[in-house]
Length: 207
Image (cartoon, rainbow, N blue to C red; front, side):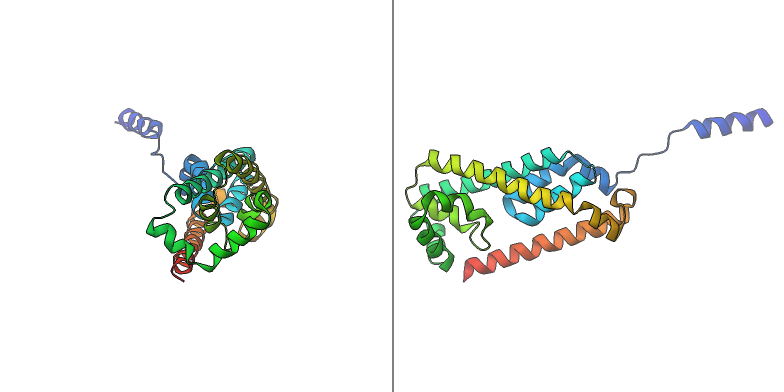
């Protein structure tokens, strides 16, 4: 009987514990894809978060920079070709009615290459500007070249901000990677920020 119990006990101890899927594991697996999508759809906040996660060793800083640059470049290329190809579409026509569109066109006329380079750094003009540029007859190769350089610099700047402030963030909330509850909190804050940004963007399009 004791041998039976001992055998059962050793068998029980040898059984591997089930592996739990944590928020950290999800972010570690999909992190760069999330940085890419955030850079394309949301902007600076998502890219700064990518730098912060790089500081947490979730992925390399260079990977976060590359994902952010690719996401920003891809989105702005899409907006550019939408403006160029569908300039008479009602969606583009609605964009023309926005005050930001007129501001973008005025800046483009004064400094074409300079404006293409800096528009993603200008609050309120990041989404509307590539559409406006597309309707203005700018050569696609020129736009793509300047857009690529700008996207790379933009990604480096904002991921670096997140990376450099990683120590400050850790001091404020502790090591996120060792407490899954804090990942839920951080995820909720990021989700709320993205939701607020999307609501603001939808309202600005209507005005």
